[in-house]
Length: 198
Image (cartoon, rainbow, N blue to C red; front, side, top):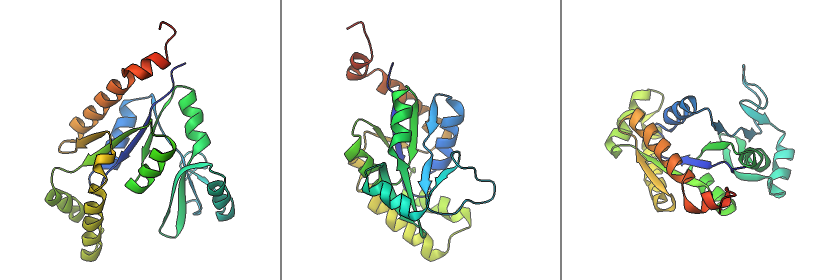
């Protein structure tokens, strides 16, 4: 059985990661989203195993100590992580998995599973990125400046990624990622490892 692809998508806040990943998933039934672990309480409507795996902080820290996560981060007072077994089980079944994570998480994944496909999503320009964040209408001036500062820091990691996709048009960006997936599935080492012909 062919092993699935692990796709890691990162990019600065406001570049459209969520929009693109959601469209990519809705267009491709073979792509699954990894269900993250979190120590925060469920919100109304969230379902265990669908939105998140909700775990107590003590169990979360134990899982980190036991190398049961691919990556983890502390965000807004709660821990979040990608469970290793969930991802690897899906990959072994030939299912593709998409991780939409920040660059720090991506670098953690790269250490554990370097054969993943790493895609960095860029806005057309930093000015456009700023405009997109402002249009949200949810950020203070200070928060906008912080996000832009963080975006510049994240760009320093771009050479650690296999591919760069510019999100100037959502449909084109999704198509570019679909082309990347197809190319990855045709790579020599992947075909050799997954065929009985050779």
